[in-house]
Image (cartoon, rainbow, N blue to C red; front, side, top):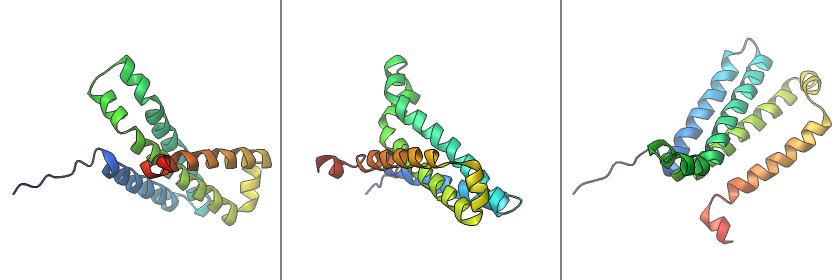
Amino acid sequence: MSQTVPDIRRGSSLFGLIAIALTLMAAGALWTGADAVEGIRLSIRMTARSSLLLFACAFAAAPLYALWPNDLTTWLRRNRRWLGLGFAWSHGLHAMAILSLYTTDPATFWQLTNIRSIVTGGIAYLFILLLAITSFDRAVLW
């Protein structure tokens, strides 16, 4: 009886790999900062960059495949849902780091942001949550 080994480079296994890697990256940033606030700020920057990369890959997958059909663009298109969920995970870590900055050092938090950024960011997070929820077939059917 032959057993197939799951390919971690696609599907839900890909999402799991992305989530673990991003969580370790964010946690590592917290511990490598000179102090707690610097670690949190490093985590904020790193998760912002990983979110941008994952969003760009998910968003551009279909157009890239249409322009240049090859193995890489085929893989991007097939895994677009999981890359998008990876983006949502990354941005969830980003939100947790921002909230950590607020609770750890409110003065620095308010020095770096304003109420308009909080409102527009909150709206953006609502859309990210809705996009993540609709990535699941059952939610789409509902």
